[in-house]
Image (cartoon, rainbow, N blue to C red; front, side, top):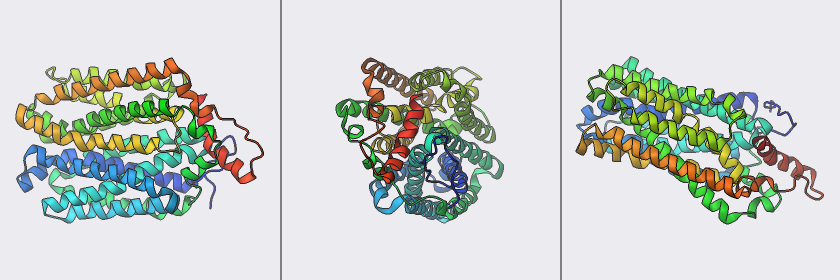
Length: 430
């Protein structure tokens, strides 16, 4: 296999260069799938005679499948290996997208959206996890690149719908499904083993057991942050076109504005990169949550709604990747923590879009920014409390670095495996 990007410390990598690029394309595809449902809600509503809340169930169904996909693929990851995990994820996503595009029965379309979500969750979880621990010291940097590519997909999908029209949503879903054949063909460039669980076993015992109660509390905090901020993210992506259209904007303008929102989210992830050298991950995440709240509070101001939504996207963008880096210093990335947190993020997309649709249907479209503002303020509160708790205890953010870096007389393969687990953590701590 062609070696992947060589880390500065010489640690072994799990990816070839081609596989890294293909995985980034995979992130573009799942980003596109996440952002596609909002702009096509009017077309689904008109075609099947659905209420607003019912039309929003498509994204919720996909997100529900993603939650199951994250937890399910996490459960079998060690058994089937890295390569088989991504192969199964891409194939599942392909079947789901094509079925959704070609099916004309609403209940079956919801089932297809669940199937799509199963594959989407597997791809998101596997790439996030493997990039972080399987690319040596460059893992955290490549993780930010991967999620930047995810953001690129969220920009391109609504833009494509604006060009072809919401009524032609089937072509967009088929195109994304067929694109997944490219990363599927490149999974041979990913080493089947070691899996993250096998790397975790190679680490010294203290990495697994120190500070268990504190880490459980920390994990609950991260779960809340990800669930809430994903509720805001998906809520805007799903209902911004409807809100702007009700405010008097044309459907094309509303769709373009939604694309601008996703573009701002992508730009935010790249703009914060130089700040990450001077600001800590907790500071970046908490500040982003606070500015996200301010942006949403400006939505009701006449004439500012499209720009306020875009500003919210700019602030939402840094939360996911920097939150994962923060989590990586607070709990082992090779354990269960990342699976639970990513699943929580998906769960926010499951629960809240239909709730927001019901709120709009019963209280009117003006209730959308008020509800989003409440979710934003909750996210700020949880992030601030978590940052204070970790700063106050100190050890909670360094528990994963307290392990000895030179265990007694390791075997050569074990030493290499330990290197692959420990190196990204050292990089994060610097």
